[in-house]
Amino acid sequence: MLRDYFLSDQHNCRYQSSDDEDNQCLMCEISHIFQEFYSGEKQPYVPHRMLHL
Image (cartoon, rainbow, N blue to C red; front, top):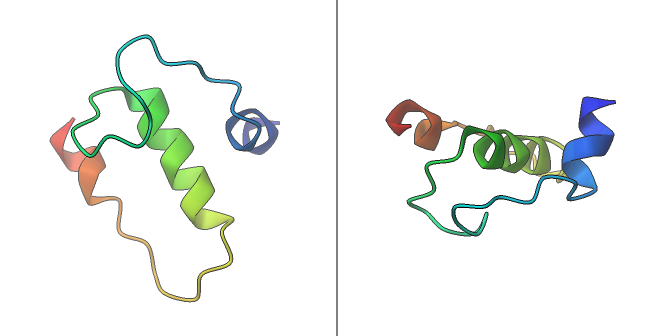
């Protein structure tokens, strides 16, 4: 259920776009993590931006 929510762009952030590197929205960052996880990339993903929220 969470995967479907985040991968179908249900979250509409009021603060900034989800493509912004300086994004301060936790939900946007979780959405980005879901997108990276299900992207099919073989390299590991490090959620370093979440540490700076």
